[in-house]
Length: 616
Ligand code: G6P
Image (cartoon, rainbow, N blue to C red):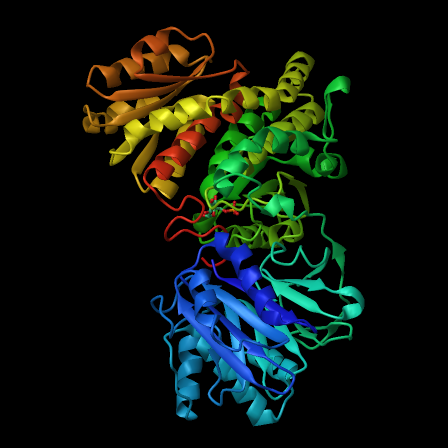
């Protein structure tokens, strides 16, 4: 989704802004632009369709100087991808330039009103309406920029993170947020400020950051404390946080793509996620979220998990873990549906939001609904300091490090691991899980990182196999029990990055429809690790084979029965059924990755997709 970068200081802004846009490329976009302002009030705007590299090439022969600047990568909502619709947008007189992430829902009546006042519009965007509205307020009431922004935003309904500059006030940068993320990096002694949609473009300059809250407008000036005001004009003290993130964690480190780097990071990210929480030697799981809110969790009559995409698949596994080990009923809802449903939610419910980015608009809105109805809110989030982390009553960070590849990999295994630890801790508090199971699972969890390393050793074999599947137009993924969500996740990975249509099914459902699709052209991926439903999925594989389907199976080491039937077998180490997804998903991530690489596709930035979906 749209990315914003801003700078005000004494350095040349252009390289900082372009570098920042590159760091945000992973979010997904279709055009890019930049506005540069110098202290003399010269304001220049440059935009290009396509990649940031195109913008950079366009700037090569320009005098792109300025110490204040704003830049943007656009993911089209209102109006097609084009230079005309790309940001920054200028106000009517050309004095203001603005970048925006989000959607102004009431842009049409505002546009109508402004048109009646003589304003004309160059683009199809809601954003241009906003910058004209700010100028309108500024000129009507003779206001300084930050005050005009505040007034204008009071008339706006919708979601926004914005950054605005004014050529008549070439010493300030004004930013604001409502339901779209925005972070401000603070240079030493306020000598410079960096603005971005997330911390990744800022981290190479400073670890000191301020996460704006909804409804806050901030005025940044060199050498001065930032001035934060609410939309109602109340002063807010800036809360500067130290963000512990290294530059190495957001670079490729020798891998061809972020996705494969992140797949390979999983053994380590599992260790990070367990650190200080899973105390193997004491056979204990300690989660402060559960300890601090023990009563809330023990009283919970029901748990509702809300999420989207890959995080929703993790939620399906979470449901099985919580129901097994805590005996609390769990429902798993698409956040986008839940937010508009007349859900029966109340104070006896715990709502768990699962999100890598912590910024997904639908998940945030689902939490809002649950909050209004009195539920207790917990987040399972990766991005530290993100909106969901700050909105919830408590939370458990996945701590798997920044995930840059659009197709989620290590975030998924982190989420499943957090659910496992949460269900163990809560099951223990409730006295539901027996000691033997509790300790056995803890032992087994501590072995998962090493077992994942064993799976990763088969990368070359999977890369080789992937060449046989690039022809395919359709795939079916089958799994049962804990492996059913793995089938969904494997299919999603393939769809996202290789553009091959893929469906995940609970294996037994195959005979209720999908079996009609099976022929010699149809690859069927079966997750058939050893567990109580092993014999059943064996029969399902037989059904596929007798219709000529080509079976790619994920099995437990030493398996004979499935391997005899399947065309290709990937073995994963033995583990407990509830933990099988942590291992079984890895070959599916690798398969999707290598098929996409074979097809020459942009693995890290697949078409039309965004990493962080900040609009509904
Ligand atoms: C987008 C991403 C997916 C992700 C989903 C939910 O669609 O491309 O990878 O699973 O959003 O995002 P979240 O950050 O809430 O987990």
